[in-house]
Image (cartoon, rainbow, N blue to C red):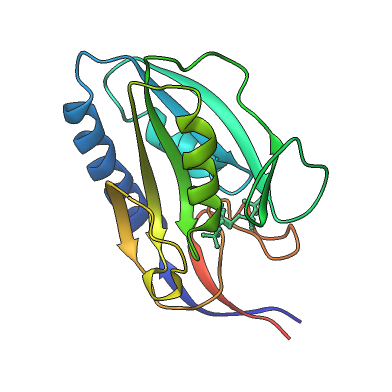
Length: 174
Ligand code: PRP
């Protein structure tokens, strides 16, 4: 049975942080052609909220990485299950994820997208589990640093459950 031990971030706290990050991104990318690349599946909720609060026009793309499954591209232990569908050459690209843990996913995606020759390539994450980092990854926009606890909600799952929770909770699973 799964139990939530605490609500780490409620809806209001998340919304305020998303607003803050979107404001920084809007200022930094003013006058530039920005492509937001959502890392499926966990970043869907964050991407949806973030993009609606960015004032500059944005294009959106989706990419899916996994440590297993049917690979179409690979780097280290992470595989790409779904690649973006448009040309990002000479465009300003911002990878959007909800949580960075070991950094392997982001590292792999940085390498793969860099090969497509974007004008710039950065990342935004709502949560950063910094103590778990195995690979150094450059994250320009970070919402909250969190301890090494298993979190669900706001797009994040445990066995595909809890993605639809509007808040972020710590899960004690047995
Ligand atoms: C999670 C999360 C990040 C990644 C971070 O995705 O959304 O993309 O793990 O972990 P890392 O820094 O150790 O690579 P997950 O693989 O669980 O897939 P999902 O988003 O489809 O749930």
